[in-house]
Amino acid sequence: MSVDEPVGLEPWNAAWPVPSAAELDGLRAYLRAVPVERDEFAQASGRPPQYLIDLLARARRFEVFERVTQVVRPALVPELQLRQSADVVAAWRAAEECEGAQQPAPFWAYVWAGGQALARWVLDHPEQVRGKRVLDFACGSGVSTVACARAGATALTAVDIDPFAVVATRVNGALEGAALDVQQRDLIGTDEGWELVLVGDVFYEPKTSERVVAWATALSARGALVLVGDPRRKYLPTRGLEELARYTLPVDPEWEGVSERTPCVWRLRPTASGRMPGRTSDAGLRRKAAHRQPA
Ligand SMILES: C[S@@+](CC[C@H](N)C(=O)[O-])C[C@H]1O[C@@H](n2cnc3c(N)ncnc32)[C@H](O)[C@@H]1O
View 1 (cartoon, rainbow, N blue to C red):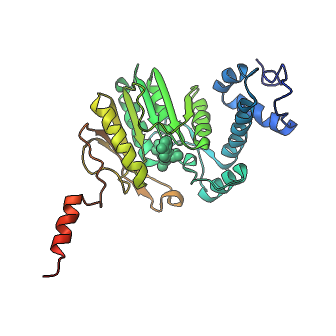
View 2: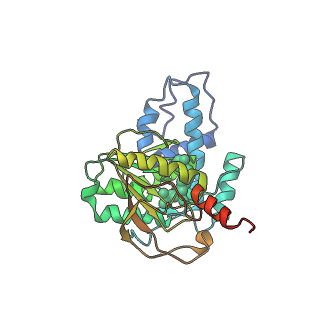
View 3: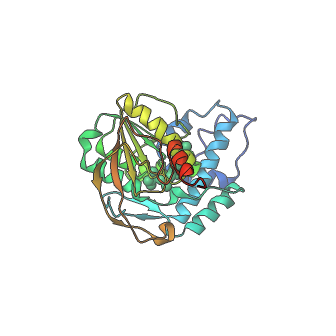
């Protein structure tokens, strides 16, 4: 199928929305950049119009992603090329204008220290990835997904709840020549038999952190290798992490508020606890409360 003619939109189903010429141009540009989508697109005829609506939305997000980011070589993995924004506000504003609604922070527009650490480790230990069923959870820009593709993962899935991250990871995969399976899903709590699960830079928010620790610990207990890449964000679990590697890299103060981070790659042990730093156990709170009793 050629993306230069509106094939794939044919035979035209009158029930489908008719894209404008500009939308079709955007769609073609997107399909040129992300070859994996062509296969999906080729099967689109006869599918419900929602498919086309979703595809056009992806093409709009692609236009934003291309506009607000530039190709960089991340400090820890200079052998990879990924798109990244130097301006968090511009990226955020563009995403909100695109969606016509408030959006979460544009984490997809930056290659985070935790993801870079995982990517570095994966590229240095391809034997841990080659031939494996791999999940990159919360892929963001897709830096660790791309590293896994290069290292030879057999069945590689990346997920993120942010639809911009889906586009970002697909586009960054295409820069590497990889056609990636990237899904917009919250699959915390599920188990699809992954042998290796990457968790890059997600412990910045208490609720998600607690869910991720419980889920990832269960995956580890049934034998999956769960690797956490993190520069000690506030809600990184305090127990059950075995350090495998430590790196130091410059980061963008515009995004991080500091100019350097030292992320580690940890193996999550089956015994990891969901206890968060700064959060006292119930027993500890009871003891503290007892000490504060008036005499
Ligand atoms: C700081 S970014 C890290 C991205 C990438 N792993 C990296 O290190 O560059 C955190 C990502 O987690 C994603 N996220 C948060 N909660 C999630 C969930 N329940 N399921 C999937 N992704 C989630 C966000 O959308 C965001 O892209």
